[in-house]
Length: 321
Image 1 (cartoon, rainbow, N blue to C red):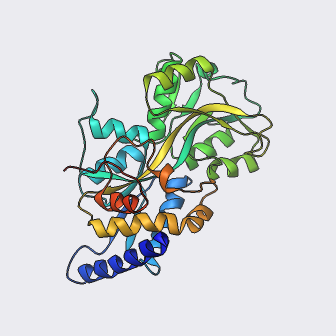
Image 2: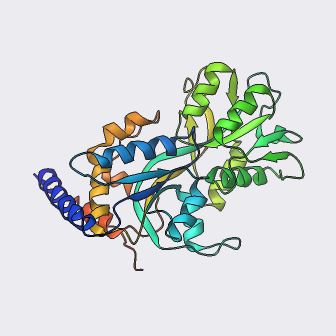
Image 3: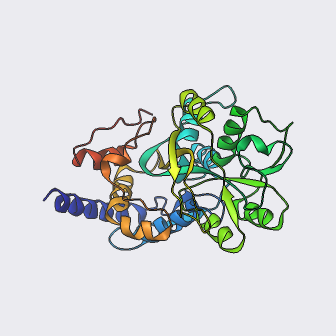
């Protein structure tokens, strides 16, 4: 009964939203994703299609960006209304660090799925562990991306810097092509597993995933509150015969605080009511549940999302801005 009532109320609010957009309000929400070849881009397009259909009728435009950090900057400067970002990057940029001034003006909608850090090498590579990357050429993801931040933290845990290896900033697709033709020795990819770009690469070029050692894993989970230890099971990719141990962060949908409460309420409902369609758009298995969607998030939730969760019996902190 609660679900039926919530669905009916959401549809009523969408009608209100339609009236607002007809009165000169901004009628297209820009969604920041990431580079082509990654799950953020695929999921962003699926979410855009879902919101455009009945009963939501919310117009959106997908924006390809450099990834998490870029999305948060764009959100805070009103160049985006919605964005996908990693939980660790969100916390760092929302609260501010020594390197980054605090950036606000946005809040959480939902945690979506875990994103393992995947370190890929050719199957015939002599690289067996992260420490073997000394003297090699490695793609750490696009500049300003969450993947780059993860790569830097992991490499530093091993005592590796740009002085001990050659670092390249590439999109996932560029890195996969370069790894395939031997232009680079390894690539980092923080994405839900299986990541389509790695699946495609493994189908054409024999590759391996490199595990993170337990000592460095413990160091990183102890130093940063956002990493969790995880396993990428054998068989996730073509030719992967063993489990791979690594670290994971959480993917999160964010919304500008300027997006109306009723709009974010409808978007939040769409995530759960249309999760089958969203899941089919990416190779990652995620059975989105309301209780799980509020976990591992350290910033406030948008009032519209909080309204939806309250109807599910879940209390969350909301933005005070």
